[in-house]
Image (cartoon, rainbow, N blue to C red; front, side):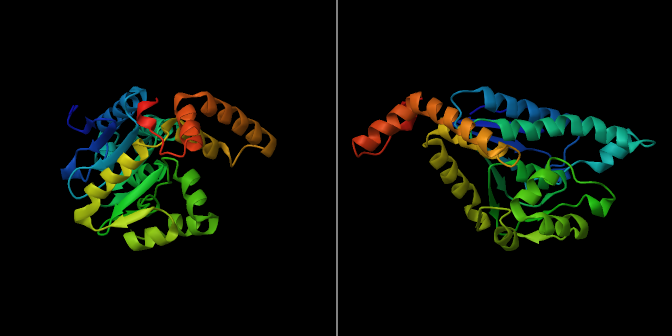
Amino acid sequence: MNETQDRALLSIEGNLARITLNKPARLNAFDQGTIEELHARLTQAARDPAIRCVLLTGTGRAFCAGGDLGAIVAGHPDRPGDGFRALAAVYHQCIIDIRLMPKPVVAVINGPAAGGGFSLALACDLRIMAESAFLQQAYTSSGLCIDGGSSFTLPRLVGLARALEIAMLDPRIPAARALELGLVHRVVPDDQLAGEAAKLAADLAARAVGAIGEVKALLNRSFDTPLERQLEDERQALVRCGDSPEGREGLSAFIEKRAPDFLSHR
């Protein structure tokens, strides 16, 4: 196991990476230093070919309370916007890193995910949530506009009308409601969250991660790509997958009527 600096921890166990926001006294709210560490940890996970799945979570009783507004105002009392400009420049790169990472990223929502933490969770590919946790966009209640890509992800997950309701009225969304809305994929008892997240990560890591990465990229582009371009992108991705070690193993396993062993064919 390998751990990095205090505010964003990275632990690697075999082919799984766990990135943990680590400011529990501030509900893992991120200041400039924290978000820069998160960016570094995401970059490291993306570049390590041995890592096949990434879990993103928080220390203590929260997933992430978003930006540390107190620190932003204290650092820029006359023009808080300057603090948001600097923070968002790195924070938004983290969102891009997650969306472009050619391997699955799972948000393990162990507690409240609010503001930027809400957006961070929505940027992940899958979300598993503890029963006691909740989601809240929180921005507009503080006189702020949503960021972190949630103006992109939220309407794609729940539709425009529901996204407007969430953004304008800022409801606290408990786990059961989040599941009903499609904001998360699974809700589990609090004491089972770590184990169920590990099982999900192991399942993903054992699959054809190269193919998952291609599918992730295709789906990310699908809302804004004409059909003809999307079909050509699919054709090229299918060729790449078919010629890859994982693809060859999958085809052989299908023909031989056996379970594929993607971990041995990377």
